[in-house]
Image (cartoon, rainbow, N blue to C red; front, side):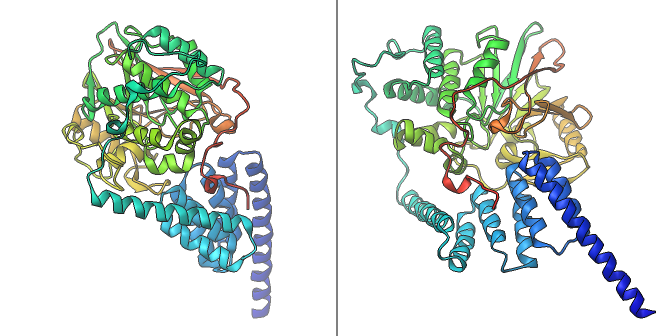
Length: 491
């Protein structure tokens, strides 16, 4: 009798294992079709049926990487290695997750393991060398930073004496001043995949740094009853979709103000064109064109996801350093009519944060790993009450009760944030108190999502949502300039 029950258990376990394998195969198909949400769903079901299979965790880890849930990806890769410490793909996944989170030393350790076990693996060797180079570079930068007060790139530039060659027929700044004519010419020039002269690019950067550095960390504006503002979410280097926003909604002007809510660069391979266009409009309409910092306006992200590589490929390392300086002066949040707060990420890891706390943030730096500045750039909403560990591995996730308490304490109506791809381009959660807007349609040429922007009017501040789809762009793939370590393959 006892033997029969043992055999029965074994049969059940075998059936569970077979079912789990079928779920894994189903998930693999969804992954291949780039439907990562369903892939995660079925990998999770496979894990539930057979929680001791390292492959299921490893595969789900890669799906999480594709959806930028780096914290979850790291946890799954770690779990795979707890189950099987000899599972080499687990080390790859964990290294990639740590790289995405800017934890380069931890990533290097895992790449070392892979190279030791697979000395003839060229891909592993290349990733180890690339990661090692970054670790050494970071150590060098820290050493320099502690030796002297960092000088601004602006101090070493002689823009006045930069010559514009006779064969350059593109747009130029007249007396160093941005005009609407210049902006239209520059946008057309970029549309034809032509490069703005470096003198003009430097002029824009130096001037916009001056404008941004005079702004507070929390920008506060008042919309009159008849006024309307357009809020756009992430644009991520998708220049041709940015042009489409202006086509659909009109060019920025004193009577058509915009707010772009961070993540202008990285991933998409036309980030320079996007950011120079946005900076140009900021200079043309400083009171009516607003820019907030996203988590991708930071050195670590730019190093991994393409912007640094793009600037170096199209201009120079010195110009990237100046971009880095400018990004540090981007404001972190914007409040409209004392009722609506806009930020890139979301709310805070602790209760009690006030608008006054946001006003006091010293933002001219790379973001810290925790605290209000980090949360403004990185946090995400969740459907359940309370807070939980971030799926991204940075900041937190906050529930409707957290949103309710924050709004009540600060006498606000709702928040608008970006930071997450949404199938419809926007999402309304937390009983209408937390709105997400994302303006990069068919993100990375693969997500199939719509883009959206929001109209807010001074009379009632009731959000109106406008959706749009991706437009064709030249045959340059996203992530074309990204660090080779982030070129993820299904290993």
